[in-house]
Image (cartoon, rainbow, N blue to C red):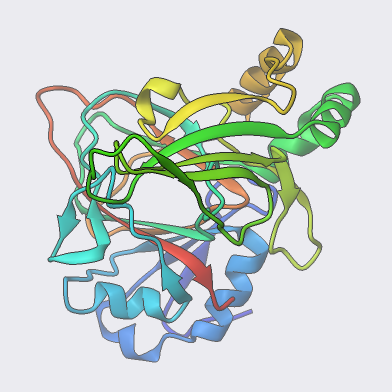
Length: 296
């Protein structure tokens, strides 16, 4: 079936529930892209790698606009690119980044994550991709029942206001499900949030499969906004369940080396991503965009 004129479609990996999708671009076909077909592919596959798409500061956000109603402003963690609040540099150092669903500890979790490779590393810093549907399907029944029965509780401190040097806090209302408490701390200029959600949830796939995509694998030290992560009763997750999800996640993770002008479109509610350590002798240049609300 020829889905998109002049595009060659390949699967990414059998590790993915529906193999993922790699679309190879030709220089002459950018104006002939069938975005409706791409959306159909994305809902099924959950991840698309656009190869040789060759975007720039003028047309990068125009391309993602075809899939986005609104964008997340990741101002507290990444520097601006092209002077835009919504286009950010991936500049968090060279250390390994464990698997995670972007901002899945937050009530405003993006629906789609984009990474555009301006300059790849040559030998290190492979991107990690884990399909939460495949991972969930591989878990034992006892583990599944545990995560279906227990929410994860997060405590967040998000920089928002200028410091007012007052000692008072003011209760604030945010219209998101799962928020237990929310305060503005005028002394620190932060919003303090207690938020709870399940580690497993339905995807945008037509079949509405469950996906295990969350923030349980990544260290709290790498997330300055995230102060605490426990069960809702303030207890930790039992070690036997953590051991299984770490082991099964590794088995269901694909490592890919990004190429110049690769654009990855990721269903953030289904897939977790990460990165291997980058050698100190190498540098790479990656741009990140986060679609808060999509039109898919």
